[in-house]
Length: 148
Image (tube, rainbow, N blue to C red):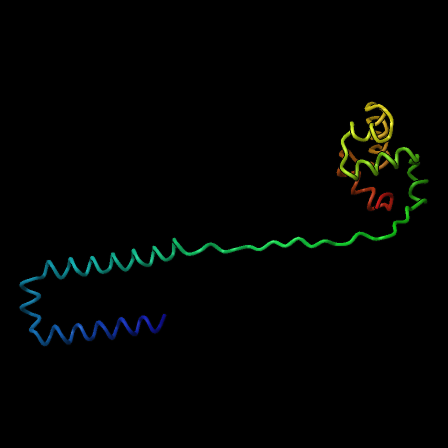
């Protein structure tokens, strides 16, 4: 930036010296409107170039990388929590299916029960875990060591 300022200052000095050499009074008096027009045009061109560089600058690139964290190879269910909460083996199975992201219909097909039975088991699991949503149930189940 300093180099540009010094370069433009030097060029302005050279222009002033040249104008003095060719008797700039005659030039200024005879062509004052043209000089003012040229100065305004130069300033407008400079601002336009600066603005063009600002607006057409390439946008910042954000690189997002996915990091795969390996799941623990061996999961040990916390039997104390299971007993404390009073979860049945079927309710734990339903909770595992919910954690796998299955819908009620898919859970019913895999567990060989009706969708209403799945809804009943899900409601009981939610009550025992003290949650309202499936995602909360999965999070709470992982916190308590019920599911991997």
